[in-house]
Image (tube, rainbow, N blue to C red):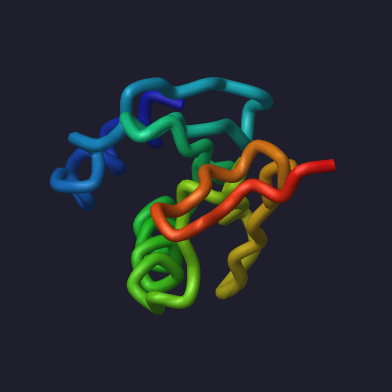
Amino acid sequence: VARFLQEAQLEQPEFWSCVSEVCILTDKEGDLILASGMTLKIRYEQIASQIENYRVFVASGDIRPENFAYIDLRYVNQVVAGRLDPDSVPRGPGSIEIPD
């Protein structure tokens, strides 16, 4: 785990400044909690490529990270995002509430 932390800080220093917590789940996997509250599920190996996958995913513009409960980066060249409960997704300024 210490090696992972060193590698992450050296290879991705600008990203690391957005991380508020590191949760150790197993000897190979953990969660990064970003300052925004987003949870990133990661492997300790090849963290730089996982962070790059996250950046590409967010930069695609087709998603709003705040609408996801977590983003799973543990897979090679694949990002899996778990949605929040629809009732907990923040409403935009143009949204209206429909009465029962």
